[in-house]
Amino acid sequence: MDIAKKEKNYALISAILFTVYTVLTLCEDVYYRLEDLRAFPEYGINVASLILDAMFYVSLIIIIVALFRKSKTALTVGTAATVLFSAIPYIMNLIMGNYDALGEEHSTIGKIFVLSIAAYAVLLLMLILSFRKADAVIKHLWFLPSLIILIYYIIYYAVATIEYSFNIIYIKGIAIAIVQAAALFFAGLWLNVGARSADTKDDEQPVGVS
Image (cartoon, rainbow, N blue to C red; front, side):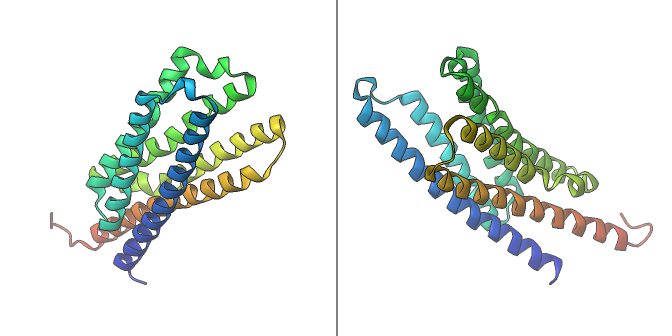
């Protein structure tokens, strides 16, 4: 398979996986929001949280479209937005001490969410480096986003299992985690193939030609 075909396939696979991840996560989010509203109607709807969630899903949609179109510029915008709209509620909760207020186990689960943010931050870094032609760095970093998100979920479910014991609900969450990790893996692989392709072109360029 030639390099152009590999790039196209990896970007397409990543786009499909991100689509599945977005749909599953959105369904789960809507379900739990409705459950909370049903259980605690007196609290109503947290508009600020709803807006941040909506912007997060918009950023994921930008990522999906960017991967389908193989646009690094659009992917950079979508990834940057994902980092931003994930970091804002995380930082707000840390400042307000919401994680600690929920108990020690929830505090641990909440605080390690920084690893999820870091996964997309590393992907963003790779995209920025790709525009700067830092191909050698990308070839060593391409797998990090998927690895970081896997570490996040391993810690998450290890803590949750210790505190609550394993239950059937986790199977759905683990499936979502695997899809997300795979989506990041193929996105990184797409950038890696592009970086290696750029290196090959540079090596084949005749001496004295710029």
